[in-house]
Structures are given as structure tokens and as C-alpha cells.
Amino acid sequence: MKFEPPRIAPPTQALTLLQTLRAAQRNVLEVIPGLSYIQPMVSGRLGSRWHMVQDPGALRRMFLDNVGNYPKSEVMLRMLRPAVGDSLFTSEGDSWRWQRRAVAPVFAQRNVVALAPMMTASAARTAKRLAKRGGPAEIVGEMLSATFDVICDVALSGRDHFDSAIYGQAIIRYFETVGRASILDFLHVPQWMPRPGAVLGRGSVKTMHAMVSRAIEERRSEIAAGTSGRADDLLDHMLNAEDAQTGRNMTPEEVLYNMQFFIVAGHETTALALSWSLLLLAGDPEAQERASAEARAALGDAPADVGHLAATPYVKQVIEEAMRLYPPVGLLARNVRQPDVLAGRQVLPNDTIFMPIFALHRHRMWWDNPDAFDPGNFAPEKVAKRDRYLYLPFGAGPRVCVGANFAMMQAHIILATLLARFRFTQADGPLPVPTMTMTVRPEGGVRLIATPI
Image (tube, rainbow, N blue to C red):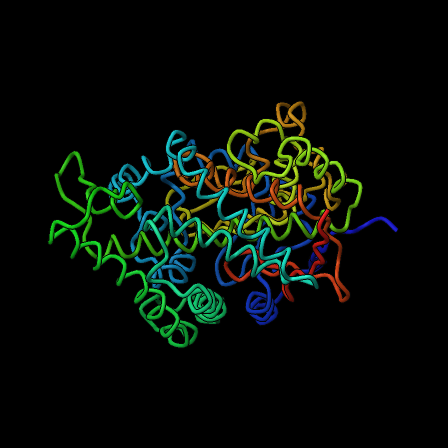
């Protein structure tokens, strides 16, 4: 029987306020109506007017041509600020622009290439762990460990101050509390009113911030004592960043919040992309054999490095297809500042715009057989013909993810290394359900058997 990737059955009728709240708390993907998979734009009212936009021209206008008119929604910011404050991801205007300039050099292409040996070493360690395991492995945990090693090296030149298990549990706890929708959000209660989830998530925020703060304070102490050279890592760039217009440096809070954001985002989303990729390949032996043969021919017995990327294009297509079916963030929200027209429909100030990336990537108007796993969707000739705004795993426009190239290179190196050494098959048990609180995770985990080749 042909493998069917896990999916969500969307609601076919409009949800009531209570139904929407329950669905959003359980799985945000369940609030995306079925019409969003077949129409370019869907509108409704739930206290105030909302629109779900799946039209590439309208998305281009929001991400690029009129980006200032569509700031992140207050609900989205409410979920993010306890952990990442007014960091690069949540700030607007001049504050965002100078923070972007401060961190961009770390993720410039030449620097990303220089970081590749860290990715190769992490891929080799992951393969060694899987070879020792013997039985079924919980792949999400394995991939989180692999990517956490890399982001700690890039951000802090090591993970001396981090217990990855405790930090990872704090992230999950945060997503399950602060990161869940509250009925107060749907009732438009002012943001200064504490949400129950925010109260329950304070411990997880404290745990994450304590680890990051220790690393920052030790670096500051080394600099003050003259015992620290230029580490040339993300923390180094942040501590030395200076606004060209005002001459100001990042405040301690800005350093903490930006480090926190990059550590979480820099390993969580890549680990999920890898986990979904391996699950999909385990369900499609033909695609797995093609990717594995390509990796074995290019790598031999060595772990992948940057020199192997051009020789393994199909491995990259697998990752891109996995992020089509399971984008790291499946739903984005924006507010409307001034009247505008999207996909031929007027939007007004204070309307809420939802960008359901999960539905966009499975839209019946834009993709053939959209729920199937087909790495051929990212063959060069198909990519060249497709509108740029139909595939948005990293966003688009001036606020496109600054670490997109870093994430793709890391995923490519790790996946190629694993496919050259193992054959992956599904362990007993049901397939995981794609579930979103803040990221699209495989609920129930990904249990696979890795058999050495």
C-alpha cells in the first residue's frame, strides 16, 4: 500500500468561539478551515474580522511590497516575548534593523561555510550514537541533540553551560503553556492581563534564561579580565555590535533575548525538519534508496562536509519536501494598520491576517497531489517555474529568516551522513500526528529502526 504521510483533517464547517479555542489549545493546525486548502483567501468573524491568505501575490504584498502595514499580531508577540523579549524576531522598525545588522555577519554565506566542520562533527557523533543503539530510536530526541551541539558551538563556542535535556524540556514546557492560545486572546482582553499559560510557563523561562545568562556573564568576565580572545561566535558579535547611526550597543537584556531566540530557533526547527525527513523516507523505500545511493556514492565512509553538498542534490530535495509538508511554523499572524487590498479583497485596520503556511504548502490550486511525499517537487526545473511565495518555510522579504542558509546546510550535512550509513524503517506503533503549538512537531515522536548498511 502506498505510504500516506500523516496529515490533519481540516474542519469543513465554521468553528464557534469555543470550538476554535479548544482546537487552538489542542493543535493550532486544526483551526485552519478546509476552504483554506482550495481557495486563495478565506474571511470570517470571531469577535473581530479575520482573513486567511493563501494567494502568492497577496503574500508577496504582506512580506515585501507593503510589509510595514502588517506587523506581527499582539497574540503572537504575547506568546513569544516572555522567552525572547524585544529581540530580532519580535522587534519592529529601527530596533529590528540594527539588530539584524548586528547578527547578519555570523550567518553570511562565507561564515556559514566556515561553520560546516562543526556540522560534520555533530553528524558523525549522531551516526555513532545510532550505530550503538541497536533497537528503535526516538528520532526527534536524537536530532535535537545533534543540532543543539551545533548551535551551541556557533552561538557560544561550546555548550559548557547547558544541560541539553533540561533545556529541551524547558522548551517543550514553554510551548505547552505560554505558547498555547488563551480564551482571553479570543475575547481581546488587553495583553497586560496575565494569561494562565504565561503564569504556568514562568519556570521554563527561568530555566532557559539562567543557562544563557551564565554563558553571557562568564564571557563578560573573561573580557573584563583580559582572558578572552575574539571567539568570533554569535555572542562575540552581539557584545561588540554597535549601531552605526546612534553608536549604542546591545543592552544586557537584548543580548540575552537574542541569544535565547537563536539557540531555540537554531536547533529546534532544523531538528524537526530532519525528523520529518527520516520519517517520510522510512515510509517510502524507493525515495530512501535513491537518496541513500546518492549519499553513499558521494561520501563513501566519511561524514558529509560542505564539499559533498553539490553532489547530493536529491538529499536536499528530501529536506525541502519535508518542510513543505511540515513547515517549522505552520501558521503566522499579522495585524492590519491601514486599509489595503489583498487578493482582490479589502482588509481594514485592526483586522487579523493569518498566513497558514501549512495550508499554503498543501494547496489544491498550487500543488499537484499536495498531500503526497514527492521530493521531485524541488527538482530545479520545477522550482524555476514556481512562484517564490508558494513555499515559505523560512518566510520571505526583508524579514526572511537570517539563519536559513545555516539551517539548510546543517540539515543537509546531517541527513546525507545518516543516509550513507543507515537504512531507516518504521518501528511498531502508529504514525505521529503533526501538531502545532509554536512549531509543527510530530506528536507521539518518531520511532525508527536504523540498520547499518
